[in-house]
Image (cartoon, rainbow, N blue to C red; front, top):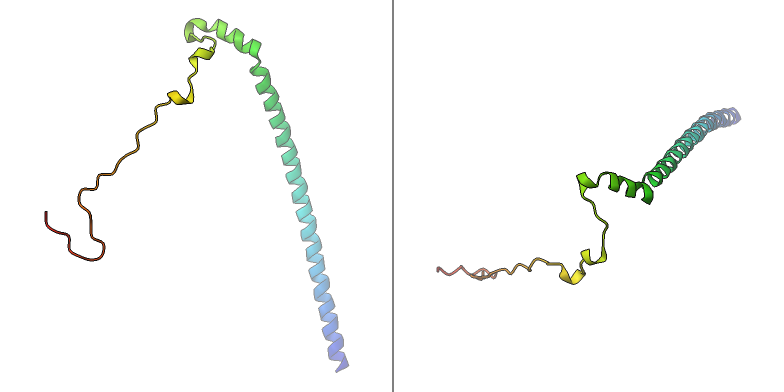
Length: 115
């Protein structure tokens, strides 16, 4: 009986060692994948910061004012003034649709009367 227990214990220790070995390498691979994703995120954040800086540079008020002046003949852009804006009370909302009920239907099961 003892040799059977020794063999079972040895096989279970070997199985656990094999499992731990595989888990160790799976964990290391997951850590490498995470590090790669963190590098990609850092690169994308850097690219986004560069794009935001470029957007801010291109949308400077003095530059836009100069572009409007240069292209006034073609675009006809004028400064926005307060009297050009309206109020919420001036918005025309569509009228609510009214359903016309001409022939009521009996839902209890009676037959519909002939017109």
